[in-house]
Image 1 (cartoon, rainbow, N blue to C red):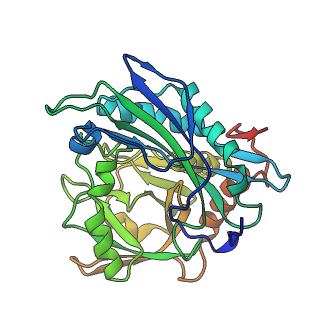
Image 2: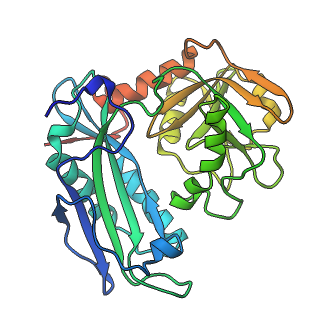
Length: 338
């Protein structure tokens, strides 16, 4: 295998094996190993017609000690259960989820990037309704899959400040809808606005609350946070995904002696932040240099365009250090695979 580990993109790349299990007759089947990238599905499957689909994203890392580490995959399992409940799918038990993730990582061990390459093994668990229904109702059959691929940084710039654009003419999700669930429809709803942002030279789009357009919501496919007066501030909303990365950063911020505030964040408050960032599994942290509101003809700037702020940098380096085993994990977040 000849891969340029330090120049990987964030793209589909074929690996050796994936893991599958089918929920049928009220119970989950055994985990099956497959080398196929496709599988047959009924044309009436509920995932195709009614959006019964949920996915997760997490990573495996090679430490300096050569050991493979997973980061909080039990939390991904619990979040997938929450998503399944939200759209009436069969729930994948935490133990089955974790077993599948650990198994697929070890089966594709040769694709895990080496320590120090800046790359990781991205893991994509997927739960879909594969039972056919023509009426709007839950399927009786579901398929759970996990596949992997080595990836580089989500944004080509890596851990560098980016510019973002406030989107006012699209909503990613509505209050009391599915915004708090990790389901595909939320991401489909974001594609037009993100493409518009790209065409205008921005890294991604930032969303405001769908009801009043007064508060910060999601930050592209990630959570937003701002830093001011030794305080980590992140929005609270019924339409924001419960980010495992964000919760981990909150814990780290508190360990730094910072105050943490999870609350509605008015748009005008952007002017008060010393640093800002977007956080999620794919990029970990994306520092934000500038947020532009083209409709209001406003612009908010944080630090300089070349380097992330000191708090954002410390948060990033600490979290990545724990994930890769370079720093001690006092929280029991990582699991070393044998």
